[in-house]
Image (cartoon, rainbow, N blue to C red):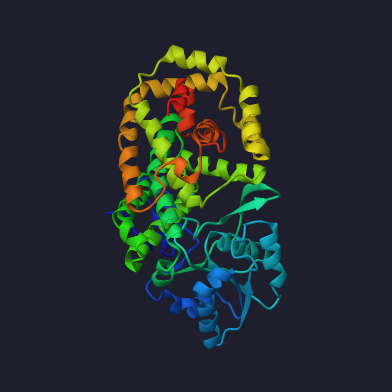
Length: 442
Ligand SMILES: [Zn+2]
Ligand SMILES: [Zn+2]
């Protein structure tokens, strides 16, 4: 029997039968049901709050913020409501400054009411002001509900900053089901990304020997299957189906906390999305919701994995490719394509040395000797065409072109996606095999 979300949240966590680590997390109270918002005053009191700083934007204020404030005031808990001026706030200094200017010393607890940007901003406010944080999500659009990091645009760069994590999450499925359909689809896209992230976690374990927990991976996979089965109902706004989606997103976020790495939730497809975000900050190019971009990026990644199943690894070819590789040229091309955000990627390589030929040769021997295992992991992935068909059925963009990514952008993003983090993902496997040309055949 797989552990459940309740097992993860339980006081003291649970000792994992697979990896023998104790999987314990800070989130101790989760209400996930219809009408869950009624638990809000109780959760605020439990967390020691006597005056609430409520952060919302105009849309999320209308969706749930006003209702939350009325409930709290009705229960005798004063509320300092900060409704941002911008209906589509960006997670940057302006939004954080706007919010922080309204915080008073009397506010002793932070309540975020909204989607990803409100959550990230409110978590930052809670972190720097050392106040407990409670989250009332209004859209099931991403898996960062319970994470202890905030994805912020910092001086024009995308950064993942340490933040507070919610002590309570109040996920009211009636509120969540009323979210714009686009945001529900984005949540499904962020879940679809788990096909890749789970396979790449296992591939990374095979090739580099990194930590891997089969129990955590199985929990996420199981949840992914359930979410996909009810995705059509979720898009139609059925609260129970949206509840299953939300549970999947929360569970994945908690899986990252348990594993201590983002492996259960993000792989190469997330880095393609990150690159798009970085380009938009540097060059003002278009971008879309995180979950939409990640879900779309799954498709070319699946096609490349399918292409890998057809090749026969060739030691001489791979070694010659690594010897001929010109990192200076690669780095210059990254700078041009990504802008200033590429500097952190170049800095990472100076510490990591993934393109070092000795390190490559050692990885290559592992890949060659364990190729059958690698193929069996790749065989667990769905076919790109099947997923694209499913996407069409739920009104989700079924190709990069459908969100305005042309072929050159897709190819370049794939080529650089392995440079974003020190994680073994598809572009690294292609490079190790000397099979990067497969990208241009997409
Ligand atoms: Zn484990
Ligand atoms: Zn994500």
